[in-house]
Length: 473
Image 1 (spheres, rainbow, N blue to C red):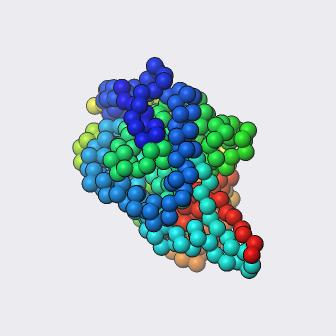
Image 2 (cartoon, one colour; image 1 turned 120 degrees about the horizontal axis):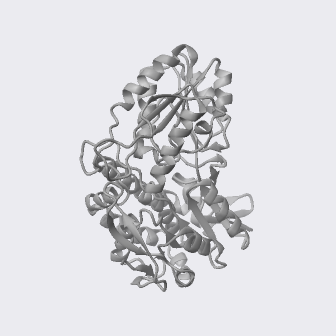
Image 3 (cartoon, rainbow, N blue to C red; image 1 turned 90 degrees about the vertical axis):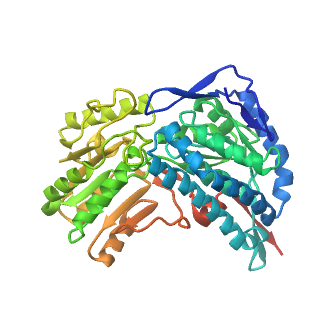
């Protein structure tokens, strides 16, 4: 069994319990990690609290030097880490290399660049009238991360937190923890000072709650389900610590009359199938004008046909397994629910995938004739399931798009860029993609409503881990 990483050293957990790490394509146990205890959390938090004074006293440039060394080591190991991600959570090999490892590498370097460019302004302070406004580290940050983009979500929390001068205690998802261990090995080899970064593996109800409740943890940054995020907020409220939440979504993809329908549908399907549908910002509700609706349904079915479940180690595979047996059961039950609710099953379904007796594979599924009050249109499925919803007017499309408790992401496709931008502004979501706008690592990412609070990515994602002090002069 693996160890925990506390105060600059690998050490055994005080708990005798363990969690098996299962390859979702083969259902074989590939590793075992500790199911950490509250005593382990206490030790990690104490180490982080002790290390905070020295780490926060370093200049931003000195912290950049430490983390640049870590980035160099991480970059050199990207191929090996991508293979770990394929085995750990089922990401197809190409996707694992490009996204599951490539994206965190991009964000890692982006945050270093941001501090080099803006550190003087943010951390030394700027004059505002007769005041000096300074951004300072919060203290000990507890980072609780999910299994769907394990490394990406860790990097989005740990790297800006450390660069801002905080120390960190990380609890990775016990479902897919091996990427976290690979990154921890990088930090260790890079010589990060003892206690600055700590890893405690384990379950949410034990390790996660202990971090959220700990009086010496000054901030919790959590990514996961809305239900779990609500619990983190409740526990953290007892000590009035800052909480940043990146939660669920049920994102709309609004295709306006006059848009390039073929391109919009193709790109929309690809977005939903990405990571086997296990993306909180997936555009799972496709809204199409009734005049083009049946054509869009046909185009969606044709596009989905290209996403055949397969061995994630095969370079040609585009749709890997879901991450766990529990996730497979959940997605299949939602597909059955869609049929029961009266939606038209265009392609896919809940039946076992032929040729994959082992592994948590599910069919790529398209539903048509979906009403927005159906549960498959309101609840996060977290699988490769697309719901097509018709509308008659642009006003109705906006109403449907906003008729959800979530507000994480959205998309608009339009032949008229001004109309598209006007609709994008009306959507209640933290990030809106217009006509397939490219990913921007400098742009903030985060949700409205029950999709969470706070922002990641870019300068807002760095400032998230800072206190703001005003010195009147």
